[in-house]
Amino acid sequence: MQADEANIKNLQAQLVGQQAQVVFSQQQYDRNRELLKSKGVSQQDYQNSEFDIKQATATAVSFQAQIEQVQSTLSGDKTNLGYTKIYASMDSTVVDQKAREGQTLNANQQTPMILQLAKLDTMTVRAQVAEADVMRLRPDLTVYFTTLGAGERRWQGTVRQILPTPEVINNVVLYNVLVDVDNQDRQLMTGMSAQMFFVLGKAEQVPQIPVAALGPRVPKEDNQNGDAYQVMEVTEQGVQEKIIHVGLRTRRFAEIRDGIALGAQVQVTVRVEDKNNKTATGYPSRAVRGYEYCKPVTRAKKHTALLSQRR
Image (tube, rainbow, N blue to C red; front, side, top):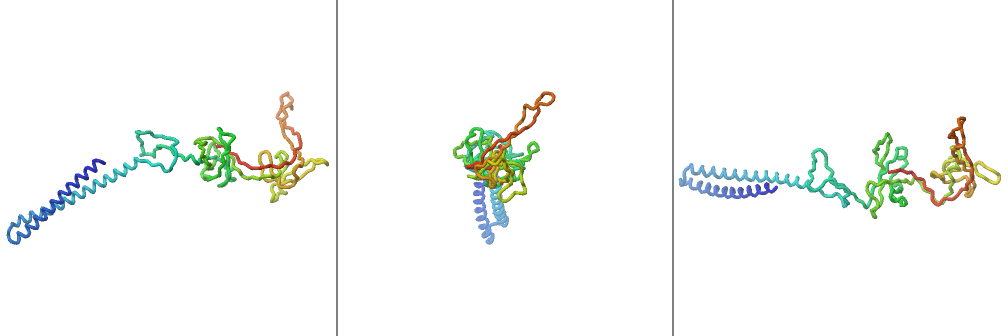
């Protein structure tokens, strides 16, 4: 660039000198033209002065073209120099620096990675959800998650986006779900593992029943209150069969919409492995037996249906 700038100054100086030569040649030509009328100069002197003015003008035009050519080269050099300055696209923190000062970068084949920026005030958590569950999710769905280092703390967030292109890992189709979470205290860092819980439904101050107390499904009794199940209620008159409708369900409890009163005793069947059962050869078999006990219908302070995913 400095050589181009010096070359331009040199050409500009020569152009100024040549423009002076054009003025001088023009004056000499005008004088010879007037003298030629009175035979004061010869025809050859007049023609020489005409040649000088045309040659001086052409040389001045040539210098101007050379200046424009060097200026074009200088402009391209300045543009290339601007490519050596990289500006951050946002106010953020450098979380990874791939290149060091003085290192040569090859950008001919692919764009080199110089450094990685992250806006740590708001973190994006990516959860991989199986195709069997992803249709149950939607944007703005409430999410909370825990990390390995702070298992007692729950970070709250909402689903921002469900990416439409899946990843296939070990023949399992997984969709990436993005969740934004506030990180003003900078406790969350890039690359952390988290277990996410998607809140599919929530009900508070509702009756609940142990899932183990639910009997067979009764689809023909389903209505707007929910799915119908058969349960066994224990009363003073004995065990009575009842049809109830349930709403939200977790692994342990189910929300009761109607069909049984709060505080009622229901029969719960627990299936356990009978290790004492032996085969003819004397070795225990994997037989299953069951026993029954009663539990009351209680009221839940908060009943939440969750979908859990590990990140």
